[in-house]
Length: 168
Image 1 (cartoon, rainbow, N blue to C red):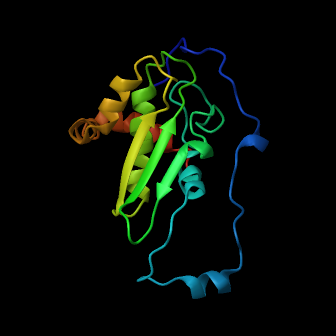
Image 2: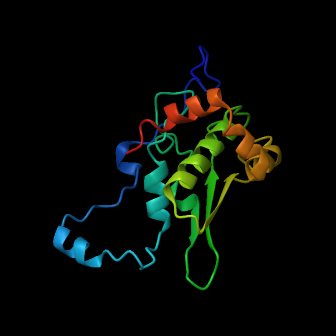
């Protein structure tokens, strides 16, 4: 959904060194012995961040992590066998009047629903005080029926797929 004139024509961009990534273990023998289909694989905030950091911004040729829309410190995960599993992602729009905040939140929600086990409840919100319509955006993102209806819109899904095309 590239527009000719972006709302935020000069966004702050984080340097690559500020984008946190987990180092990957290459010890395949250890990994192979740890894999057990019946065992619950714990998921943490870093893993969620890794799923989201490469999503493209719909307005700029940058990722959500480069624009600090998605930050590791604003991802909260509860994943204990004794409690319901939940992921909360707070997004920070680049400007307080960003008209694409709902689209970005929807894309994050779709990405997580496709990647996470069904035991997770996914909650995507605009971070408090970062958007002039945060309550309205949060209400839309929290409404299961609206999210489901949006996911049935072919044009919207095409935009979301484009945003996620940069993900690993």
